[in-house]
Image 1 (tube, rainbow, N blue to C red):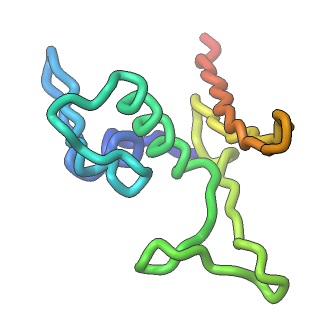
Image 2 (cartoon, rainbow, N blue to C red; image 1 turned 180 degrees about the horizontal axis):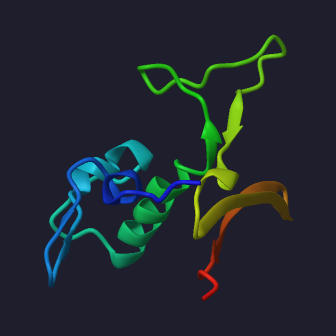
Length: 117
């Protein structure tokens, strides 16, 4: 089992000092964040969670971020949840019918583990 790096969880340009964690918004663009000077807090936290989720579960894509599909045209997914020591993140998505429109609600479940002494 491995430990996750700052760059894996927060993007290739993530750094830290004794008092700061620095996350570049451009590193979160691939997960859907459009960087602005006034992004809402919920946009930022969702982007960070989606970036972290990439290390655990997702769909395999090509260099243009287009999903690679199998012979039945279903996206090929991966699951790396068992690779990391103290953290597990998984996506739980289900449909909620609302009137005549189906909505997709994605929930992210986080399990954090501690080491036994």
